[in-house]
Image 1 (cartoon, each protein chain N blue to C red):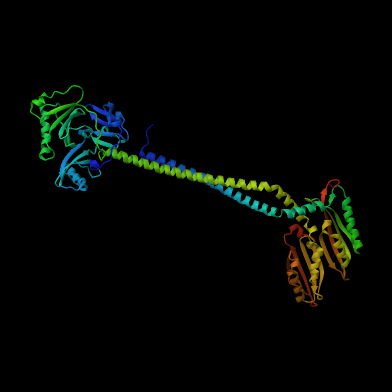
Image 2: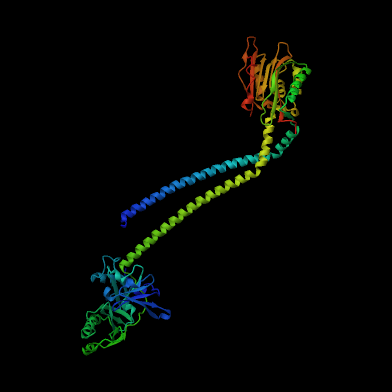
Amino acid sequence: MRALTAKEQKLLFLLIGALFVLLNVVGLQAFLNRQRLLQSNIAQLRIQLDEHRSILADQDYWEERGAWLETNQPFDDVSTVEDDTKFTEFVEVSAKNSGLEYTRRGGGPMPPRGSIAEVYDASTVKGPMEALVKWLSELQKPKEFRVIKQLRIKSTEKPPDVVSDVEVARWYRPTEGAAP
Amino acid sequence: MGGKIEKSRAPRHGALYRPFAVGWQKWQEGEGGVWSAAGEAPELQDLSPGAGNLIAVPVRRAFSLTVWVPADDVSLFDDLLFTQLELRGLAGRSRGATAFAWQEVAREDNEALLHAVVLPAHLAPRYWHGEVTDYAVSPSCLPLQKNGVTIWREEGAWVAAVTRGDKLLHFQPLSEAEPGAAMALEISMLLAPLEAGHMTEGVSSILLYHEGDATPDLADWRSSGGPAIDTLPWPPPVRPARALDCVPLPVRTAQTAKAASARRQRWALTAAAVYFLLVLALAANTLRLHWQAGSLQAEIDRDVDDVAATKDSMQRWNALNAALDPAGYPLEVLHQVARLLPKEGVRLTLFEMNLGRVLVQGEAKDFTAAQLYMDAVRKTKELAAYEWTAENPRSLPNGSARFQIDGARLGANVEETEGGFDEGTDG
């Protein structure tokens, strides 16, 4: 094979140099992309770690509340309607006992969501404002896990009577069969 | 490229290559300066000279010039001698292109007797080697007769060297093929200008080195009435005190090219090292980032169970917050809204609330009373959990004003704020 001339050698060197530079540019780009990805990953992990530290800083606080919920939140056997009936009966009876005129507008169980088995009762009550306040205070107490989801109080022509639409729900823990 | 021979660097004690009657000899110097023959070859290259060796350039391949220079300042000798070389046509195209070296032989009054050795610009490749940087002329590598003439055979011809004291004064090839009367005459003619120039201290003897056991026939020399002549067998070499302070120009070119190549190689190696270090630094940084990510992930994984349990408790509590936090109970909100009512002049006509919103409507005796009440609701810290919005109260024909104020619980879901408010409003 014929030996390369000086010009051919120079051209070959330039070609190899260009290829080397090209490979380095591509390699460097891949390298830097990988580094950027890692840096972004590290930033996310740091945020996650900070979040975890922040959560763990209140660990005792939330564990206490979790334990309280475990102890106090009642169970609802979602396979039966026994508990639901008891709840709606309680709402109606307590309204009447408070001196209100009670008219049910609707109610029933809602599909369970997470740790909540919901049964609600929608009604219209009529009577003195004082009776309504008494009834509402009886309905909603922290340990009863009842929530007034909607309340509409409207004055009537004969104060202090009011007409109120109330939607009250009970948020128990769902279970199948007997409570554990 | 000229210089005083005494000033030049000392040769290393490697092999010495010198010409002899037919071809080249290689001599190796052992302990105590004892020389041993290491080979003979027709060509120098066959003996593979290398760096650290010394090559004796044959007499016929170098020029000898002996001159008196009118100065005693050694620093001027170089320039004065180069001028002499130029005058005699022995200099190259420039000072840099002239390979010459010199030594001071004697000094009288303000004059110095210098002997210069000039190597031709185009010395044939068979007399040098690119790797060898130590050169001498062959007479410098022989034990020369003091204040005498030494004759020997090189490359198939006789050559002669003249000394003053023990210093080489002059050398030149001889034209005669045999040491006879003609050669005796030639030696006398060689000495004549030297003696005429007061360059010798009187040549006392002539020594002829012969190769082989047989002494050459000198009857013709002696019968001619020429100077007395002795013979000795071809001796081992002597190492010159110093090598020439110059190298043949092709060697210098080869050395320059070699140095340039070495420099290029150094640059390439430096560039490669920098490149390698850069790649290493990038790789190390990537590894560090990998390690950092792994370390963070491990730290996260270590607490993941505790975090999940805490989060679960948090989510359960927050999901049940509307049932658990009395501050958000409708009755409490109603109490706070009612508490702000003045003793007279404002009354509520509608209170509506769901898990995320509160709507309050009422009537006031006038626009100002309505506005004051709405401001009170907006500013009370007990209701700061809601963001309140209100339009301007609407004046009624009887002078009273009707107002409405709407509160959205901060942080409430959209679902919680929806529903139930459309029917109730009577504005």
